[in-house]
Image (cartoon, rainbow, N blue to C red; front, side, top):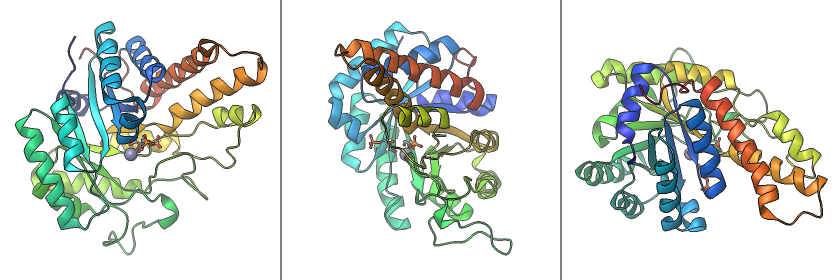
Length: 320
Ligand code: G3H
Ligand code: 13P
Ligand code: ZN
């Protein structure tokens, strides 16, 4: 079975009102765990690869591993570049057959972000590839910019609804990653764990009102940092004090409001680490990698099954 186009997965997800899990992959065990979980749950899947993953594993290894996963499974799988930071990196991935790329020029001023994103869109669309752009900064909720006096702040870190409309129209991106208090990693919140879901609703509405239809939004930093896994990591010699993620209830609201692609990496890392640490602690004589990577892979699979079934609600939609 060949790769499935990201565009087709998005269209079905928007129609079916579920979210697609976009899981980061760096090695064979992660790919196997994610694909097996989605296969068992009949969930459509986006595997995403960062620049760092390409540097770590080598793009050819990742491509071949994904080819193996695609040929051994029968669920639809799309392959996406996560946080492409230059036109050249996006072009490489487009030329390699990725079904979508992200151009992340969100650190640039608005006009420059538009210019770079538009250049990627022009090349990508000529080569049957979709593009995700980003507007706003993933700084977390410590810079909370919630609604003030009935309107949303401009010029801050969070995505402004009207600017999102302008950005999508001018750049032509197919989906948009937004900043609403989300951030990457295992230490997302110091105080209350929350996303600015009112802003998310306003962004979605502004896009709809501007004639862009049910426009797909992307939620980065969507790991929930499960406290049972963190406790296990710490119990077996790890040190992740105060690790905190996005409450699953917030992800569910984000899904219902219209975050069609939900990015998860940190939770996979924590599950894998918990599995490895447990074996190392309980069986210190063990040195066969299969004996610790195998159980760790099973932990990742269990986590992904939970996500697609209970949080993203894409389980059962592989063959819609
Ligand atoms: O958004 C970042 C992803 O978690 C990928 O992380 O750049 O360390 O591969 P990475
Ligand atoms: P997490 O760090 O919350 O898993 O986010 C991953 C991500 O956004 C990848 O682009
Ligand atoms: Zn991200």
